[in-house]
Amino acid sequence: MDLLQTLKIALRALRTNKMRSFLTMLGIIIGIAAVIAMMAVGAGASHVIAQQIASIGSNIILVIPGSTTSGGLRAGFGSSQTLTSDDVKALLTECPSVETAAATVRSSGPVVYGNMNWSTILMGTTPELFDIREWGVTSGRGMGQQDVDGAAKVCLLGETVAENLFGSDDPVGKIVRIKKVPFTVIGVLDHKGQSPQGQDQDDVVFVPLRTAQRNLVRSQTLNSVGALMVKARSEELLGKAEQEIQSLLNQRHRITNGKEPDYSTRNLSEILAVAEQSSKAMSLLLGAVASISLIVGGIGIMNIMLVSVTERTREIGIRMAIGARRNDILMQFMTEAVLLTMIGGVIGICLGAGGALVVSKMLEWPTLISVESVTVAFIFSAAVGIFFGFYPARKAARLNPIDALRYE
Image 1: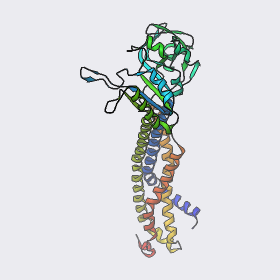
Image 2: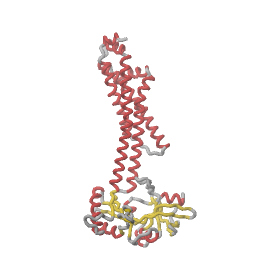
Image 3: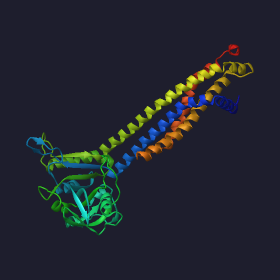
Image 4: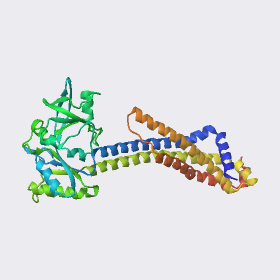
């Protein structure tokens, strides 16, 4: 019996009991749809995290000041002012693994333009920060070293701030007031989106470091900075760069053995890599949970195929009597099982893709349907048919022709 003839017989058998065939496929349909939808949701989340990682920049080490103690209570890292602009100069000259570094100071307050105002994060920094963050401008110009040296009252607006203050108008050249101090807008930054912590990276205003130190933040000394952002020369040198930074700062800040450092270093790449791994693990978990329904559907197919073998025992006996071999009977029932799962798989893929799109639109949750996930789901559905259809098919093929003919 050739394969084409076997397929025709299998399709005829499935059409004979349409409702039972559909109910048998239902478990596979639900299972495949769940796998596709869950994998799409997980892949979408991974894609968003990858974008967030790219928006932060690559090979970055963050250095923040140490903690303060007041009334016996420790305020935590970042509460003291132990870092200075001179630390940045020292890092650039004495740490071979460091490519560039930038100092930052941070505050918050209202930015006013005409009768519009917006409360946002105010960052004082140097041009190197935008190279580290790989952050360009959509209009106007970027910050230059001359702006920092001259303590110029100029600012760069994040996309969110620009939209809330100016709408669709171009803000370049306009005057805004930051903490009652007039600043000229020189540019609007590219879109960055959310950080891995969920913060809007575009809700920020950047001003030259010295301008911020003199006008916007309260510092113990004019040289104090809030944090250092350092970029290593390569991903392989991140660990070495961090060690060089710690060694240099320990020397400059007179941190001897046994004394707690007055600063803390954080490797952002490691933190973001952990977040990405967590997302991938969640995607695999969602796929594994959804795959359980495929196993349940496979068991349903095996049960129905066993019932079908019992109902068609006399038919099997007749076929064997007129020359059908055991392999022909085995192939016939295996083909029926695989057809059931593959048809159910195609329907399930369509429903899963549709469900992922509905989730994306209604809940505004990112989804990503990949060709790999569809292919794996389809192959897996066929494998379920082979695995769970083998036992009923083998049972049918091993029937005794005489006993089968006598079966009522």
